[in-house]
Image 1 (cartoon, rainbow, N blue to C red):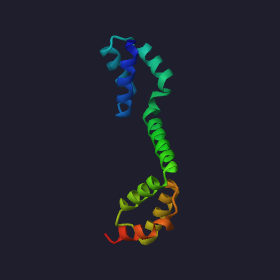
Image 2 (cartoon, rainbow, N blue to C red):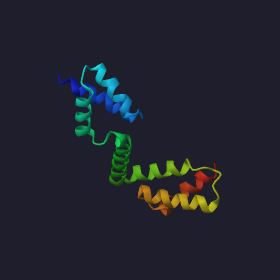
Image 3 (cartoon, one colour):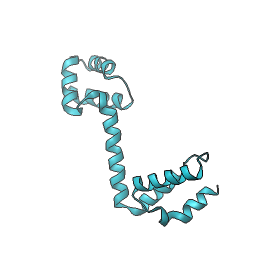
Image 4 (spheres, rainbow, N blue to C red):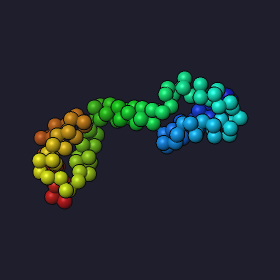
Length: 124
């Protein structure tokens, strides 16, 4: 097996965990007996800029989640209601309504269709 494969997998995990690429690269290269620059070059080809890897992965996950919600309206509604349920009880009525509107856009749902459920959540 190509020694770079396991090193790249380990590097991806480190970057996702928020480790600094400049610290992770030498450590991982050393563990796998690889030249640091060679691992860096392979990582750049495989992952793109290492400094923004974690952010890009989070954005991709968000896009996948949004796509899944668009395909399944029940999932979208449930996700929307879960997000509404997690809103801070300290929000004013206007702030809460604005946040519900923002969440409705994010989850691509009609808040009027979930009005009764939202009202039940508010009473908790």
